[in-house]
Length: 110
Image (cartoon, rainbow, N blue to C red; front, top):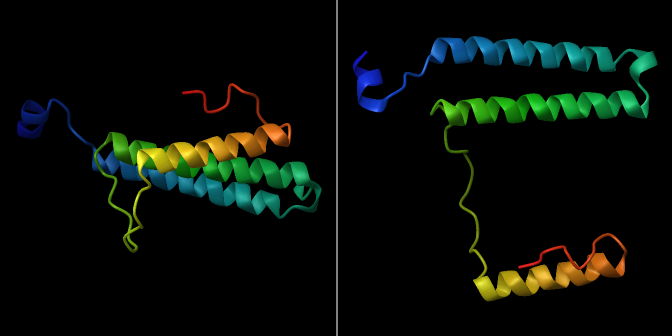
């Protein structure tokens, strides 16, 4: 009750963990189904890939919403580009995409 009064919400970690476990079990069943020869087509693999990404993304969003998301382990990244360098790279990408017919002038419109 104290946490709710101070923060205005209460995180139910047990409920979150139960939901996360159920989603992981569902993903495991989907992956098992992908091994069935009749589902081993490109469409079946595509569906399995989409479901796996959806479930993982959903879990990350739920962890974020409930304040349970931890910083990823790994090494520190590099330096961010300056705003001018970022805009120049974006302009170059836009040019390449337009040249290949994969974007229009609306892409990266600032």
